[in-house]
Length: 494
Image (cartoon, rainbow, N blue to C red; front, side, top):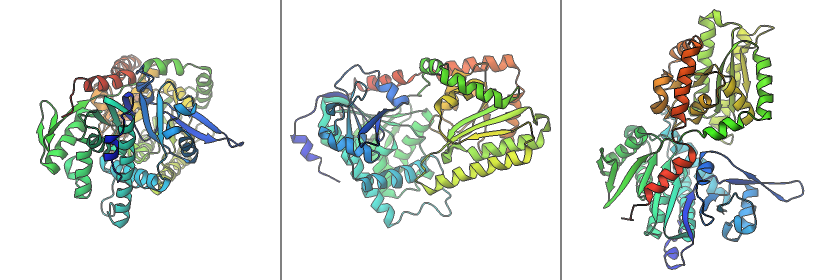
């Protein structure tokens, strides 16, 4: 797993604030002439980090492909900023991790094991089966986390604040604390957390290692109190840790970790400005032409197993089968963007979505009405156009850490939008009062909720949308990030 002790005797870095995540703020591709082309990324974490006005802050991330690895290898210690790349005002250290190690850690453990556990996705009669291949993958996951811990230890100034992100890096806090006990370390989970009885699907040593890895942090952050309490329950159940349910702390092996809840919100200013640019207006006009004067049900998702797209389509089919008054009066606009296409389960799921979409159109379409418009190629301006057009938003995940789509649509909606929302989405904790709540497994109840949403009076829909937008933007990305950083400020390493 590497020797962290070498970092203890080496000079410390100069970064007062560090962020660690699998995906960084930039990525690279190779042009036809062989030169590297840089692309800036987006998302809540990128927006959040922009709140730091310090050129010495460092973002540590992994190289995700061959072009990334080349850029990292050509930069001094992987520091893209020192190689002259425009990385957006912060320093970025990109780790050139061995491709086989990265793939085993990322696909084998992070996305095919930890993601499946926290989203309760396993078909347990056949999976998981933790065999010798898994042990090879687990060793890679340990090596991957060690690479991050070593890089953070090398870059961090004395007493620096380090914010480690997500399930890819669950071992990093404890490894980093071993190397640099002077640091103030936070970990944030962007996923749900499994309840103890499901979390115990993991091999006992792996389950304990993930928990103790995160407990290496001074603070462990979660998107909702529900996920924080599930983590605490796992610590009590598997480690025998002491949990203070009032203070939300976990004490284990002589250290106390504070649990924090930070409900990441939508970036209202960005969304409202971006959704009225000409490219969005152009796509909105095209969608309006396709829809005509009919009502719209909109969903925008990655074809991620947890997003529950197939049952959403089944609910729409049930609506059309049982309520013929909606024939030729509604169009379902479904954007299902490819995700993790290197995993067979995801390719199969994407194919199932396409097959069902074709079947719905075959059953109900007329020469003048296409009841379902499905797009599988990612197009952010088109998504924003659909947000603006939506009469009803369908967000029905099996389980979601938050689900920002549920928060973004009310912010962008032109005329008010009724939100049909799964009770298993983290966003439900904040939006449930003004949404139509559904059990994501109940196709008939979801169809009934779609009907109720379509028939909701315009005034009520507009009032609900205003309240949803207010709740959705309560903690925008920059404040979300700063709240976590500020919460680390008064802490001393224990």
